[in-house]
Length: 186
Ligand SMILES: C[S@@+](CC[C@H](N)C(=O)[O-])C[C@H]1O[C@@H](n2cnc3c(N)ncnc32)[C@H](O)[C@@H]1O
Image (tube, rainbow, N blue to C red; front, top):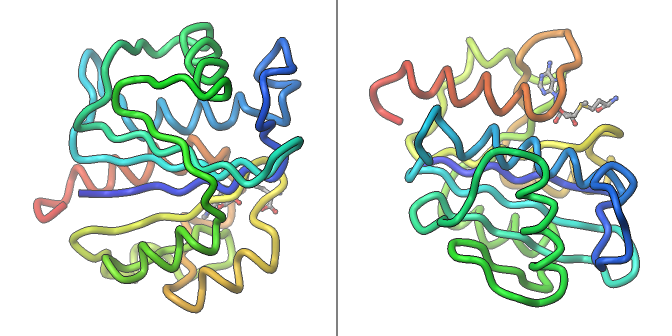
């Protein structure tokens, strides 16, 4: 089991938009969801992806996508634009739930279940870190994790780095999935 939590600073919480990019960078939510949950021609049943949308008009909104029950999806942006519009109109999609949960509340709940790893360039090198069997990884969007959110998450975990290069959040998820796939215990 592995989980990814994306903090989206400006991701819109309504359907009043035409492009994912202009909807407070919901394109990053889409890219991270696909990087987290998809293999070629298969869904990763052992992955859950969370995004906390903090954009207007009704933040926060917690999207939870469970690879074990996710259905009726493809990997293209148009499909996810329709799925996100549907969810933001309070309509259901198999394997995805929405709740009015804040980042802090989600972290607090998750910290009871597993170890939290906050992704940041200046963290401890991942090569020197033992990753727990059910890890939870926290990432920021294009602006990065707000300091307050980072400090809160670090009460329950540690800061880890994939190196000095600033990668896209979705690239970080791909790297993490690759590293965990190589290790037999995850
Ligand atoms: C596009 S980056 C944000 C860059 C932003 N300028 C900043 O200062 O955080 C998005 C997220 O990916 C993660 N990230 C990017 N590069 C990383 C690296 N080398 N090691 C660990 N995490 C990284 C961090 O969680 C970051 O918040």
